[in-house]
Length: 575
Ligand code: ATP
Ligand code: MG
Image (cartoon, rainbow, N blue to C red; front, side, top):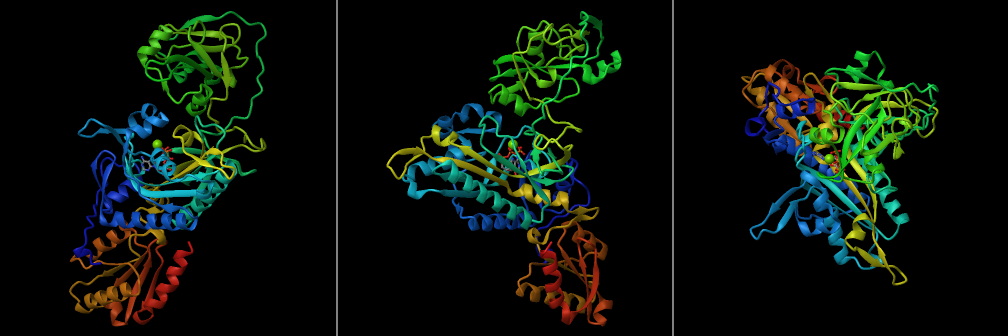
């Protein structure tokens, strides 16, 4: 492919709205262009990478026995009403009406549509198990689309769904998909880790996320060096803590003025206390907009874990209360809530059990209270583990080692669903005894473009992208340097043809540009191998090969080029 005839608009400047490196580099390398928030054009170079990723995913899905289908992206609301998700999915679901005023949504995920397909045609245990997948454009009206393709609103997902006759068989399907995912991410050249993931309301079932390790990752993962435990922080349990009452004399509470000091940080400095002496009091609403208010307590230096909290409260509609609601419940502005005298339901983290001499808001603007005691000054309705693990916490599985913390990018998710969808949608089959049974399901997602973005996060330098060979848009870029030397141009052109015929994907920078610009663009777009053709080298029948990822350069005789390429490429493919 000749760059002069190609569509590869590279840029020298970073786009103003890009916060992370993969976003910057994808735009600068001419892979993508934004058309609206979270919605992108895929340009030729970007599309080639996505196709490569798709092909790896497709091959591994097929190898694992999953079968490809393609369902519509527009789904009738009726199916979503059957499972109740039409009402609970919220604003991420893009709802549309047709000309007859019928409701549809643009599919953000396809459990309903796939279950509907299967329930219509699968009648007998003999047709199970079956795993169906598709590679398709999804839409989620993300509240904060950002980071380019990493968190788009429109994005390409591979989603697979398994249908089994019982839990045991479903576990086998899950294992198959798990193994396929490991192969996929390995082949894409990613350094990743599978971690335990939260299952939300569908307790009991297992779920793992595949995380690419990168500092820019939005997820926090914790792991134990000793026993191998690895989990999303959303899921990580806190090892139970021993609580001791510190003050048996139980002095009375004292109200103190804390003008304009709202956060624990501000108040603790002002009162010369430690954050851990505080009873953090957060007001939530449970069950939608007009839902019940609930006060949530935890030790001042802890962060609430909303996934655990939602589970404790048995809801999937949990929100921080609005400032108006906080005022209504506490009689005070945000920042001055405390458990003493509160009229709403109070739930608390285990760290609040037996809390003595606590500091909390006074439920009055500009006031806090000292000497707050659990039991005497307030009562807790339910206790639970509702905080995030923090630095220094022990591994909840082996208890023998301190947890390590890393950032991760979730590129894939496997999830045992049990019968949540099949039961609601009456997806049943007849077992060998002619008895009606509900199908047991699993769901398995991979973000195609997110893989590409994650690969860039892991593999780049100051000059640009360093694509893993397996997902690089091209294998080789030829850089003829002296544009006025006809021999250089001819050699480069015939080399392009020859290498393409040999099965390589080749870009030829035949543009009338300075060498510096060609080198910069080649480094930016990250093609794994660069072949430099220059007048001086050609006099000796030589060209230069540069390996993008480590900058290694070697002079090679033209006659030995193919042999040398075979050797280097097998090395690159190996990792
Ligand atoms: P996240 O927590 O990042 O929003 P999710 O839990 O909503 O992800 P799933 O519903 O499990 O994601 O979707 C399956 C896969 O689709 C994810 O693992 C991720 O790779 C990809 N994905 C999800 N949302 C987006 C998005 N907005 N843009 C790009 N890829 C996405
Ligand atoms: Mg999401």
